[in-house]
Image (cartoon, rainbow, N blue to C red; front, side):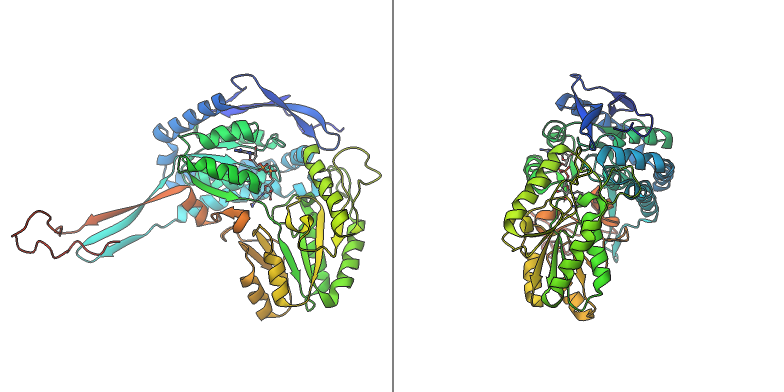
Amino acid sequence: MTNPPMSLPDHIQHYIDGVLVDSVDGATFDVLEPTTNRAYITCSSGSQADVDLAVSAAKRAFEEGPWPRMLPRQRATILNRIADEVAALNEDLAAIESFDSGLPIRQAKGQANRAAENFRFFADLIVAQVDGAFRMPDRQVNYVNRKPLGVAGLITPWNTPFMQESWKLAPALASGCTVILKPAEFTPVSAHLWAGIMERAGVPQGVFNIIHGFGESAGDALVKHPDVPLISFTGELGTGKVIYSNCARNMKHMSMELGGKSPAVVFADADFESALDSTLFGVYSLNGERCTASSRILVERPIYDRFVVAYAERAKKIVVGPPSDPKTEIAALVHPEHYRKVTEYIKIGKGEARLVAGGERPEHLPEGNYVQATVFADVPPTARIFQEEIFGPVVSITPFDTDEEAIALANDVEYGLAAYVWTNSIARAHNVSHAIDSGMVWINSHNVRDLRTPFGGVKGSGLGHEGGYRSLDFYSVQQSIHVTLGDVHTTRFGATGYADNDLGLGGPSA
Ligand code: NAD
């Protein structure tokens, strides 16, 4: 095992009310390094008592502190300072993320800048934000009084963890909420950087808090806490269902970004090489641990055999190696538990379809969570590897004959996060995209997007769309204020015999 990349403490602590602290009961868990699965650092393991402390600090900061009351420009200035601090960590963050989560170092490099961009983007939005005001001539003026919702609970997954955290922290803080972040237990190390970043940027005490630990204890306590009116969750569908029902007890506001089994539909008239490059990148980048991975490739029959052969050839040449090596294209999966899940699916796939590449541990990497880029062809839609999210470097390829069949196959899963359509026919590209049940579609493209666009899934891939102003809406209450101008006209109940008592001049209302 190489050494951790920068001076990290031996032990990662919670961050509550501006102070790094251990768990009330002293509990910790080991953090593993994915190339050897040896414990290299310990982390505080939160439970109800720790969550209670963090929530009361965040509640106090929300009710009594300056953060929700600042002018948008003042908060934006601090958000921009956070962005500067994040961007300055570039190399260190990439090294930590790569070491802790197994992300290939070359792919980890952009993470800091993307995270910084999230803060700059929401800083700009709150300064430019316009809320509605509506005049009913001589009768009323109505306007929107936008208010932050309160203490936001942010629960995040282990894939590109720091980036995922920034995606929630930036709009929550921009909106004026105070927050409690519960990072994923597989990858808590980069989250530790946030405490220093927030302090140096001037975020007031108690506004930002972190509770580390397991979902079933720390996460569950946060979800069920009555003083946390909002939960933003990214993770698996199964976890999402549990959180959904737990939120119901307190009627919490919820946003759920869940898993995917996204189709890439490749028509015979597509640019073959571009579709090949993009579908390889779509499955194997980030070790295949990518929610929007194009993990099912549907290929039109006339080019099917050629596509499968070319895809398998390329997959066999993908460089699997240590995360720290710049030549590595796929590195170690995050954790032995996840490795077991992925390799179990490969075993299942061998009984369901035709293995055309990979399927084993690379010979030159006898330990750690390594698996070859794996390709299954002729995968029937009933196969588990067609239906279930594997979240690793494994792809299913299936042929189709007509547009209708392609659409039916694309929609024949529980998920609906992303889809990719490859064709040079303009009408077909749009018609097929419109017919696919997914939150997002990329036509002749892999997933690049403008931060202003909606992000989210349908069906089992999520509830609610974030992205741009939608994120600010999620973290805010939009209170309608209605003010009478001039005389108030009211239907007068209990005033029989008076003139004009039942004309209903109060104006239209629902
Ligand atoms: P997970 O559901 O196991 O865990 C996610 C987070 O939820 C972790 O912090 C975990 O501790 C916490 N958690 C677990 N049980 C909980 C409970 N009962 N109450 C409260 N919190 C609980 O997911 P994961 O394995 O960390 O992440 C991978 C999944 O995330 C994949 O399904 C992937 O597709 C999905 N994902 C989706 C998006 C998206 O934007 N749609 C983005 C990234 C990842």
